[in-house]
Image (cartoon, rainbow, N blue to C red):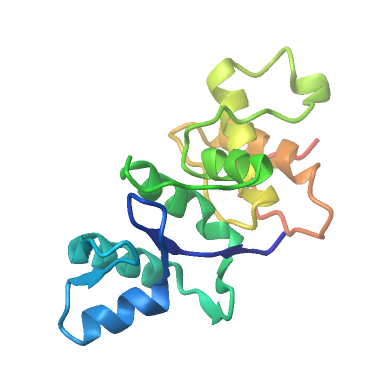
Length: 178
């Protein structure tokens, strides 16, 4: 999945809903309130609306009639932002929540099978391999670096074993490839 669709609906405490376009029209006309169908007044939290707009702009969405189409790489950022607002209700499929939790660092990353390296690598090294695998699976780029050059190359070699595309390996002349 390269993208996901996001719809935004604003609701009053009595359940009456407003589209993002309705709220935007009110704010642009200088109003921060509207009359509900039951005759009561609803005050719009313009700060929250502006914050949501900033978050959406950061995600660089494509707008469509149903809402927004957002690159799936933004799921973790969006989920982490929404989590900060307990009063914002979010409905999302379990698969999207799982992906977003991994991207935001909330979920444990699973290490792929390591074959002969399984008994050799330490737990933190396996975490590095799992992180590289996660980056690849989600279309992210990244570099895992530490002060131990051989250890880093070992992780990269193991990771490259899971890649389907040809990947050049650059290594210093003193290294031995096995």
